[in-house]
Image 1 (cartoon, rainbow, N blue to C red):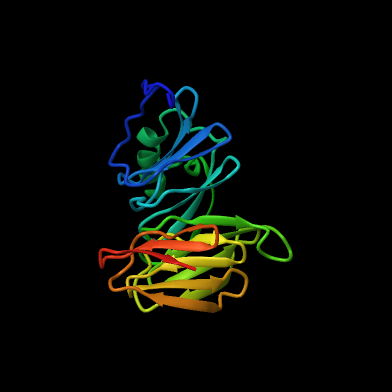
Image 2 (spheres, rainbow, N blue to C red; image 1 turned 90 degrees about the horizontal axis):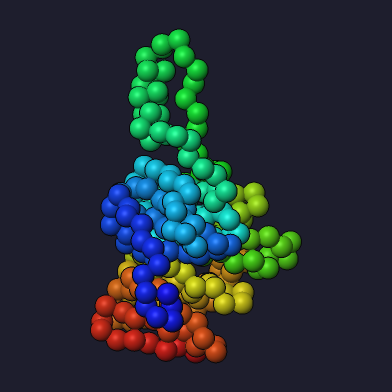
Length: 236
């Protein structure tokens, strides 16, 4: 309880939770190092859905209504339907079902895992959290911004097509921040970059004295970012 500090509920996951949860329309979306992502009822704490990815999930999800977008360490975006439910015994039975079916036994093909709407490869190694922005493009729709490997990528979610990618000289573990028509992101090359949200063109860059793995924050026209040089920067 936010007022009293009383524990309302807790959920035990299969592994460490390395990032923040996201809450939308009465649902809590959270990933874990165990490769599972969870959809939890915010009121009761009941797990509504578990979905297993092929790699750990280090970043926080982005949400659109009752859809959660999780990015696993191996570079895949998974769109998870918060309305879905696991069928009884799914993660106990399905692995054996897949093996028996693969051996050619006379049985129907195993059903797809519950909750997966679609998936998309965005990089080789991803630790950052994705960000969704709307009303950025003249045609409307939502754009997903994500740092991966040594670039920042923009993906149009209505078609799941890449709009652009912006290269940096170092890995991008920083989660991007979007303010107006500009995306801000840090890189392990020590620079904070300001990139046009529509075209992907660099607007400016600012050098710090160390690599950047934290995420920028924008408030009142000022960008705030921490660096491994031990300093916090406020940039107009």
